[in-house]
Length: 405
Ligand code: C5P
Image (cartoon, rainbow, N blue to C red; front, side):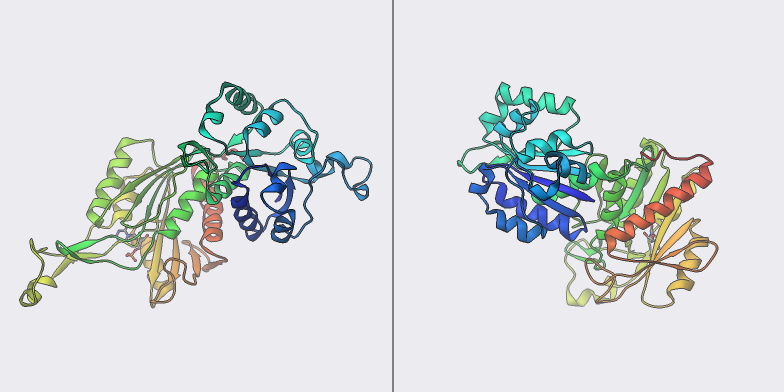
């Protein structure tokens, strides 16, 4: 996507370097436009180096841009991100004042416009600024932040610019096709913890990354998600995403069943959690001592969360499981497909140095027919490919099309 990042004059401008860098790393073409004031905080050369393009500051377009140079950039861009946006800039944009390149791009662009305000709390609260915010909202601007926290002045309040990751996430959400709108999804993620005494447990190295990426992608594309996740999973706060932390496999099942009962009806379940298949049969009430070795190890099977959930869903729901194996991957994945009543299984080879967290990752998409299909890229790209396939399957099963936008 072609993105103009408009940098306003404020100390948070230094954080926008990370925004530009992240957008470039995600494959976007970024053109930075700075207000004159912004150049007092960060040198244009910094943004030029990060984006690989000279930075535009003045309203005067370069001669080579042609006779309509003042709108060439707005026509080139698919989207605009303004960060940081101080109060004066918000007021100016709300009135359509375009004496510099940022103002011109704002007026000339037809795509999404995301704005990250940053100013002292009393300025943000001032009626003049709140009037500008109301006008810009009515004009279709999407906001990210401001957040509550410590200001450069030392005061606390609402006025901090949203963190770079939140700005990038909001950008992805505002520009994503809303082709999953109307779907309600249940996703499981992360490990489970099965205690054999009050302080020791049976678990695995899962971090929940895959489940979280699936949830992110779903809400970006307009779905709502209940994410039931095990311990120590870093869950982002996103509109449309409800997170339900649990500890053990039995907790995970109970929470999933409770979400099913609470409604709305689940259209898609994706079980990405690495649920412990076993739990200690008789957890000790006190910390195990060396002499307790015999009573520590007996285990008993856990309930199968996805199989139980799958049984309770309507016929049109799409059910996806994961199979993480150190050996016999495809055979085991195909067995799970049948025994758990799933539409698809995503199969991953796992080991001490692969499959978990940010370690090298390979995923195979396995359905009831045809050969396994490799899903390329990192967990984020895999999540995108999974949702493309789930959407197609949901449309087939439901016999109806989801709206594309
Ligand atoms: O552990 P297993 O390899 O059987 O996991 C396959 C699939 O079943 C995964 O999608 C996992 O989330 C799910 N599962 C579950 N409850 C279990 C075991 C696995 O939901 N107790």
